[in-house]
Length: 150
Image 1: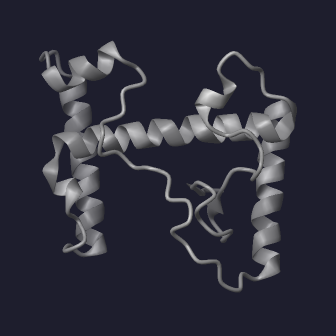
Image 2 (image 1 turned 60 degrees about the horizontal axis):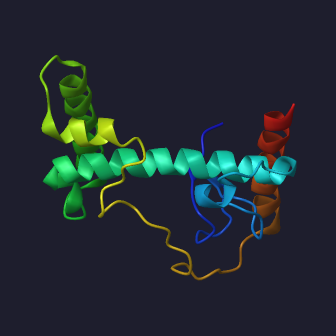
């Protein structure tokens, strides 16, 4: 019941939830237009969630330099560093102290730092993906999309 949200640059794999291809996706494509059909509704929701996640990590990376160069640490230590920065972020955010970094974010709800995550389309070479796994994730995506319409 938990999935990684990824753009279409990722291959179809178990646990990776990608948008429908060849269907409107980016938030800018929906400005002033209502999504048509369950696939567009799903893609708009997927894009909105990914933007929120990219923004959160962009803000964290802008504040906490350790997040910019994690590969030299073990996966366990990387997880701990990410959790620690989120905890510190939330503590500062909830405190009454006025923080200049948050002021920028508060003034622009669409703010994403320049070095945030970007689409990686084309970075993956598709190998022989087992059809049942591809179909499984496609079915999961269809079920989620249908639930958004209901």
